[in-house]
Length: 328
Ligand SMILES: NC(=O)c1ccc[n+]([C@@H]2O[C@H](COP(=O)([O-])OP(=O)(O)OC[C@H]3O[C@@H](n4cnc5c(N)ncnc54)[C@H](OP(=O)(O)O)[C@@H]3O)[C@@H](O)[C@H]2O)c1
Image 1 (cartoon, rainbow, N blue to C red):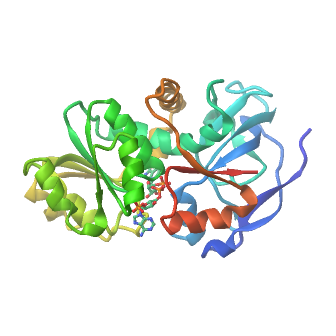
Image 2: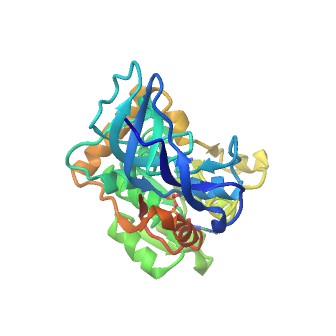
Image 3: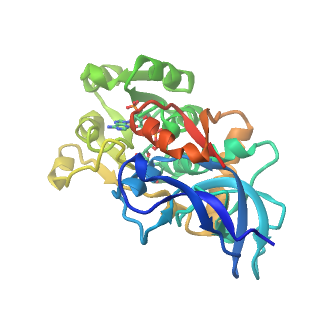
């Protein structure tokens, strides 16, 4: 049936990119409710860096990291009716284990990939795209006419958020670290792409919004952007802190929110996808906007999975735009 070993990127200790080791690991066979997935593409996400560095502790080491993949179902265990052998599938879900040629996965976390979407695009969009979906549709249901601020607007989640928000009729302001990234953001629906380095983006946003501020800030940068995010909010604004690429946000003095009666949330994709019907609906909505051409998935780089360490260095050093996909 399946080969019992495959090659994977595994960590034995947490640390820098050098802890990522390309080695043989056992695969196992799918038990009840599980499927064996032969990966053709694996998504690179910032959460992989948190797992590798130890910011998000893993339950046990050694561990194959990675939470997003696409490929083909090679075998299924007892009682699996969500997917079938030979079906093209993708997922973005715990537990870690995606940086591998093959893995066993709970079948109820897998979704079928439409014919119009290739495997590399699927691996580039599941985690980042379903995140954009819940951020814009559920955490804060963005409405036409609203103004939002998206930090790291040229990043993986950022480029999808900008395009999708733009499609919803939302005015999008983004922050980025370079003029090249600003151009990318503008080309993907960001109405105003501002450089943080100028230091004055809050002032620019005040001018753009005629002193009102933005209705929502989608902040995946964390420590370095949090104060600026609060500053840019409109009265009754909503600060959605969904990541910490620059480091964890320090404890927040709740009273700070009272200056604007602001709301603050710290959402996590995997809570929104917990019920299979939600997962299927979210993936379906994502596939729909991508299929319509409303959201283009920018796979700016692909790399052999064995070179995951270099991909991590590039992501951490802010050298990437859009999505990076690792090829087993
Ligand atoms: N909560 C959730 O459900 C959820 C789901 C998915 C992703 N996320 C979060 O969303 C964020 C984006 O994820 P992604 O995978 O799409 O990554 P990404 O945005 O492609 O990469 C991170 C970007 O953050 C910016 N950044 C600012 N300060 C940085 C610093 N000190 N070090 C590194 N990067 C810095 C960089 O853009 P500039 O060069 O333009 O500054 C960098 O390109 C991450 O925080 C991630 O954890 C959260």
